[in-house]
Length: 176
Image (cartoon, rainbow, N blue to C red; front, top):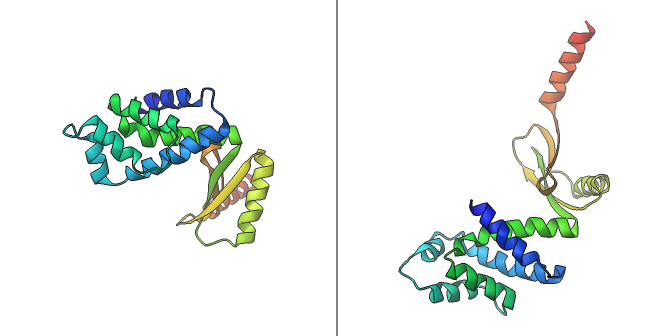
């Protein structure tokens, strides 16, 4: 339900705005959304004892030289008692901007660190195959192989040693 309401606000933000305006709004809202990671800030926003004006001032204090669009959105959200939607709005707006700009972020999961050249090579190959601008980061974890996950596109390519071993055994068993 919360996601649907946030999507409506994002859809309204996207109407008749340039890419630069949307990026500016996203940057400002992202700065505000980072404050929601603090539990005390979230409690203040959810509190019924604090006036709407004070909450509005607090939220807008995180961004210097805030655009009118962001100010108006924050005022509207505070009047409707929906300031807690800001992180959801930021997430949806980020996805929409990724589609507009054709730029996506992905993660490479491996159990050992890859060289910068290997990461660049993977990035360029995936960018050309998917026909997008792609930025890949590494996540060193317990994955026994390599997995590339581009969340915004819903693409996941994986190669694991255990999968290879299982497929080889199945192939040998079929040959016998």
